[in-house]
Image 1 (cartoon, rainbow, N blue to C red):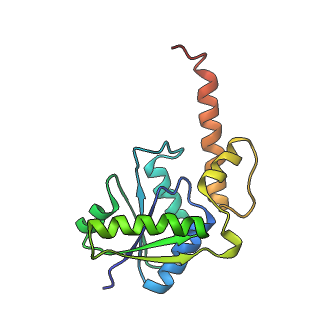
Image 2 (image 1 turned 90 degrees about the vertical axis):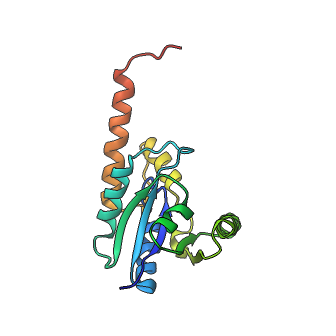
Length: 173
């Protein structure tokens, strides 16, 4: 049995760019474990479980994909699971520079880790979860950036968050 490669991120939410990298990684490596990281530095819109569910919905047609979550360092996840290959999507020069620093740090922590970069499809180079969240929060959608399942989840989540803000009343300090 082939060991899966790991594709890790916050996936808040999964975009068509993420799904493209997962599809291509599965085709090249046979098995991909998508790991949703719960970073204390970020304030996600979706819970970890909601993000995992959206990934499963968006990758149901891709053989060899599994989904997991983790709350620590990627290197620790890899070591605990006996894995050592990570796939990263790169959208352009800025991503490449950031990913090089990220790869270097992980290799310092564990020299057995290999990072494989897959360039983004040119039609998806400008897709980002933060741009998607922001545009949806203002009632605007970015066509082609997310699947219909993800768009529905975004609409529902933003409506629920907006509704809960309006029913709480004024905030006090």
